[in-house]
Image 1 (cartoon, rainbow, N blue to C red):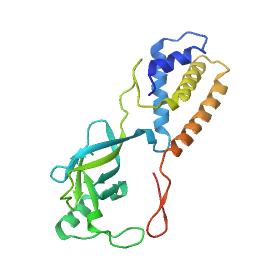
Image 2 (tube, one colour):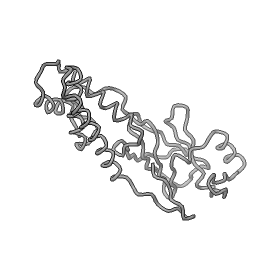
Image 3 (tube, rainbow, N blue to C red):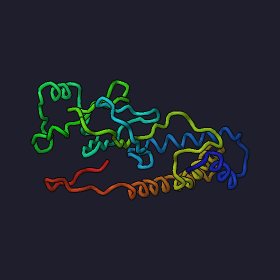
Image 4 (cartoon, one colour):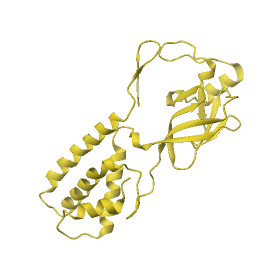
Length: 217
């Protein structure tokens, strides 16, 4: 994983000029936010968790921003299986089986879905899962607090060149250096490379039982 201090030191080896080190830490965190603002779901942010199901519920730990998928025994839920309170009440109280919105066919009751509480931390299954002791949850890691100097991050080493280039770019921009344009172009190119690298780590779309491609987030 990338260390903030190591990335800054690497960037400084190719920079002639003076800026307080805390400024580079601030620039590092700006790059973090730029990566997170990209319109995509980064695979490296997926965090697998094994959680115990208690009274038909699982509680997500701190550091999780949202659910990607849930595996509970033979059950699999993606985000499209999240139910509104009205849908959950209909399932629990009357055994209503929702229709698949794509094909208008009843969804088997055991695959109905789940609800989240207002805080987005407690998952409740509908209808209740009676025989499964634990669930594997793939969740999105939450990055809220800024990183500090010499702190390890959750960014894989593959992002190193992007961070180093971004730090040089920020320095040249601050210094009104003509090399800013070149570094900016290199930064955008490396960002596109990281998106391609991330895509290669994701599962390929699969055919569903109707012969249509099932989308991959």
